[in-house]
Image 1 (cartoon, rainbow, N blue to C red):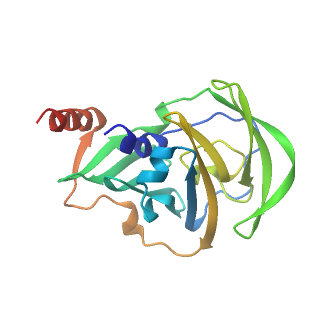
Image 2 (cartoon, helix red, strand yellow; image 1 turned 90 degrees about the horizontal axis):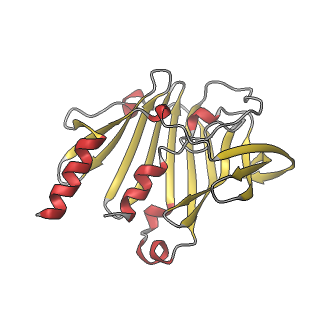
Amino acid sequence: MRYPLIFLFTTLVLASCTLPKPTMENFEGKFVYYIESDSEFYQLNKKDSSSYQIVYAKDSMLRIENFTPIGKQVYVKHIPRNKAYILMDVGEKIAIQTIPDTIVDDGYSFERKSGKVEIAGIMANNISVIDHELDTTITMNYYPKISPKYSSALNNMPGLPVKYKLFVDNSWLTYTLISLEEKEIDINMFGIPSDYTIITFDEFIEHIEKGEEE
């Protein structure tokens, strides 16, 4: 069960940043990222849908959909209230309650880098991201006109990450934006369906461990 949980934990990745904030605060629309990995396990076991991450944004609300070997995982967050849930169907429908911004990851820092590149039809800025734990610097890309609050990874960049890397479970995952569409999103997409049971993360771990013992 270890690898499928990778996508659960990557939604909680945070980073610190001292660069200027983006010019646009609120956005409504849909982003789609293509995911690549240097892991042989990932390449052998992924399905077509697991190569994509879909993000929906509506002002102060966020919804991220990941597709994994154990099914679809949905992350919903109310940004000002700092409340988030991970929705999963593991034989029963559960909403795992998280408090994302109480987790602080000081392993990253950012430095300005000149140059731009076109990604998904938009001009994205370069930025140097220093991973202090791995002692490596990677060039990533962000869009300065959309707030980083609509990403749960490296969300303190000075704009929306549009091409970035995360080192997870001894492999690199590369996320590349392939489409960005500004449009109206149904507010119901950001709620918890009535047939889901809300549990804590500790309760979810107990549920997984109990299932492995049976």
